[in-house]
Image (cartoon, rainbow, N blue to C red; front, side, top):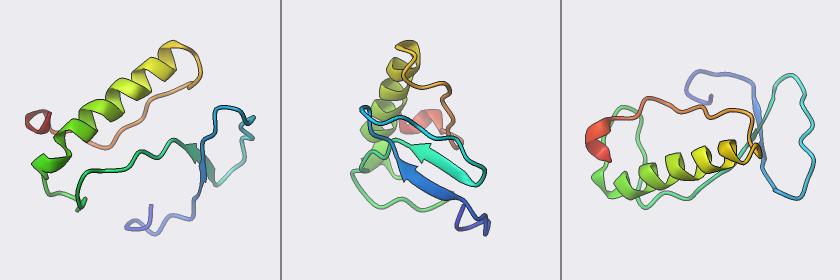
Length: 79
């Protein structure tokens, strides 16, 4: 959002709090990376992070705790 100059407020996701849907706000589950992230550059040190992130998000969707899973492009060679 920052690189595209979008005015979006990201709110942290907490399992025990109700999500309030508002225009310009997005609730996200933030997971720490293993190493630096740079747009358009693969970093193999984050390969396990990418896999874990997708796995966690899919499980939360299956449990209906999340209503959608949205990713940036994921390069298959990284995982």
